Amino acid sequence: MENKLDYSVQAVPQKRKGNGIIFSQKVAPYIFVSPFILSFLIFFLYPSISTIIMSFQEVLPGETKFIGVENYKKLLNPHFYAALRNTTIYTIWTLIILIPLPLVLAVILNSKAIPGRNFFRSAYFIPALTSTIVVGVVFRLIFGELESAPANALLKLLGLPAQQWTMHWGTGMFLMVFLASWKWLGVNILYFLSGLQSIPKELYESAEIDGAGMFRKFFYITLPLLKPVVIYVLTISIFGGFRMYEESFVFWQNQSPGDIGLTLVGYIYREGFINNDMGFGSAIGIVLLIIVFVINIIQLKVTGAFKKEG
Amino acid sequence: MTQTAKIHPIAKVIVVLILLFLAIVALFPFFALLLASFKPSTELLRYGLNLKLQAHLLSFKNYIYLFQEGAKYLAWYKNSLIITAVGTVLSLLFSSMVGYALAVYDFKGRNAIFILVLTVMMIPIEILMLPLYKLMVSFKMINTYWGVIVPTMVAPIAIFFFRQYALGLPKELLDAARIDGCSEFRIFFSIMVPLMKPAFGAMAILQAMGYWNSFLWPTVILRTEDMFTLPIGLSGLLTPYGNNYDILISGSLLTILPIIVLFMFFQRYFISGLTVGGVKG
Image (cartoon, rainbow over all chains, first blue to last red; front, side, top):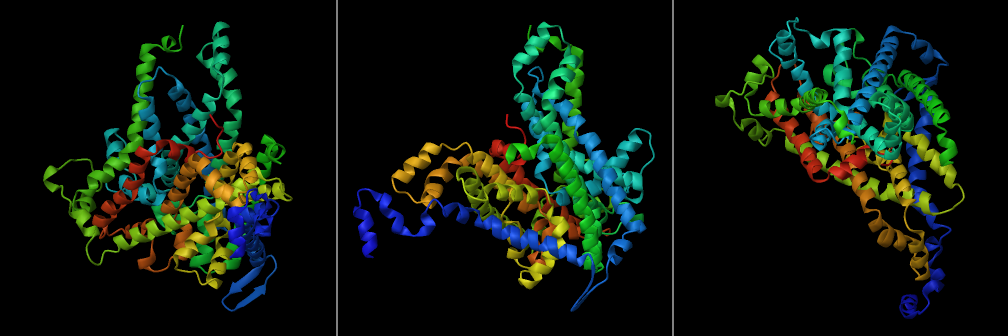
């Protein structure tokens, strides 16, 4: 009480050091970062170690025993191959579509000659706001099996046969890639747009004086200067691709015919939670972890991010 | 000679037509959903989603079903709202503190911590969901809101964003406040937080959308129907028998709509929130 009174009348309050060590400049930063440290230890480091250990175990309720590399040997099975193949091919498709297309659209939308630029930007962006799961409900109906479902009606209009979209590997892959492309196109456009806006206009002006056309400007100025953004979008797309689960879930839940919709994350879920084989699920997780890490290291090497941030 | 003059008028028309086509593709699902929500579910089941207007069939019945007794929709909505609100507030608080400290203080271990932030940012939670689930079991957090929120409440991506933002804060203010005798915490909460408003806006939206739309982790944690969030509950209604289509469609629409309405008002924050890490314009 006495102390409190003291402060209120103090003319030069720097002397408040007595206020306790936690207010000092030395200790404060550690208190500020403590939520991350705790969260890192409990929800990242511990589970990481635990998943490595579990991947060498048979995990049964009340009883856990080490079984060496059995879980990893079990990985050599058609389901795992299907999951790895689906995830990889899906990722590659999203890269093929979700980088060049938004890049070109961003260049177009960056030109003042195009009317309604803001409308298009917003329209393309809106799908990103939605939950894949909820909007997936509509996609299920659009790509329904009935001949009158919108997608099949469109095919009919074009003189093509109706499809049972969720029954075949090719059409199934199309559904997942289409849903992802629909959802993320607008976000990637915005990434490229923000990159484009940081390119100095003078570069284009001097190129025009030198007589460079639209295409030359694109390939000699725009593309090289956008490289960091392209690499960033590439990285997040690869991550998004390898962690994919929801795009598959909306069409098949956790069971697809012939594993046409099985993904690595879906396989972890299926083995770990549905088949209750946590050891095997962990082994799949470790493989996924290694994939993600390798991509990461390559990415950091290419962009030199460590040098910049460290 | 301006850029405008160079594009051939016919080329321009073609480009605009392509843009329009893509805009239709982007917006079509919303339009289809809106239309279907006013039609009886029997119609939907028999003929699938179609674009016929059929004015005589349209009604608000599907929306009324949502609020009927026995329908769990309101409970799901409530769960989603609670998880989103609590999760967002906590993650903003913690992430801004960490990001701010990484930007303004020079302390031992700062770089190491920042590298850890970047590392965690790159590891999807899905990989660790099995051990995390076991951890939540031992914390007795299964089927609780906390189980969904706690593991994700210190968000590395938000830390990263706040750090980048806080690097631009005026250091002179910090020194001036110290001379005035402000504690480090008061400096943060009463001086720096107001200055970081735009960052809070962007991250509030990113985090809120993340919680509102998240699916896999809540599925792992939430076990009973009365605890489900909207995506879990709605996805469970999608059966081949179509017996739930009436509330499925209207319920999906009312899940998506609030975010789109918010987007109309806070476009700028949405855009900077969803394009974190991109090169600043």
